[in-house]
Image (tube, rainbow, N blue to C red; front, side, top):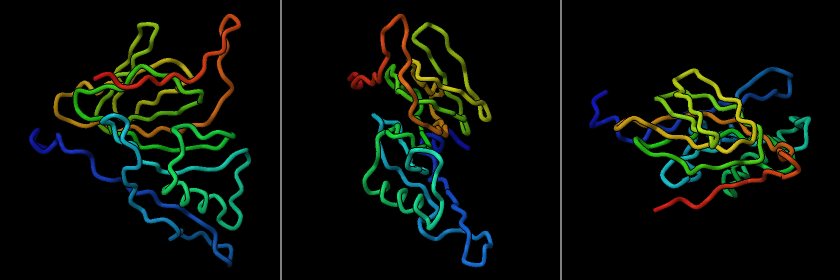
Length: 182
């Protein structure tokens, strides 16, 4: 792809939801359209709400309760991490040569890099370059995501669930998501 074209945001991905019909056969649900559009702008990075399950576990799939909950969340977008033990799945697209602020969410996140590259910087000074297929197990630590490419967008999939706050030397480390600087 030419660089002049690659600076455009990535296309909407599709999400297919399966269900069980009245005969006990697996089918695709038509409750929610397949394309996953942008639901949040995170200061330039685009977040697409791919799925939400209400907590606490175990998830109730009977009668489509989870699908109805997800459909409702598309118009009433939940926070990045759902309270009460549910799970949330985000596509996070980062524009070329941009970064998130250094932040912490009180969550256990599985983040898979699926397109482009992104650098994961930790407040302890370490960093890693993530390429497609790489996964991060983000355990409620202070971190920043940076797309180092000058013209191409990056896409990650993040599966997040609330966790107990981390306690270090008697201090509880809570959510920290500062406002973006100029």
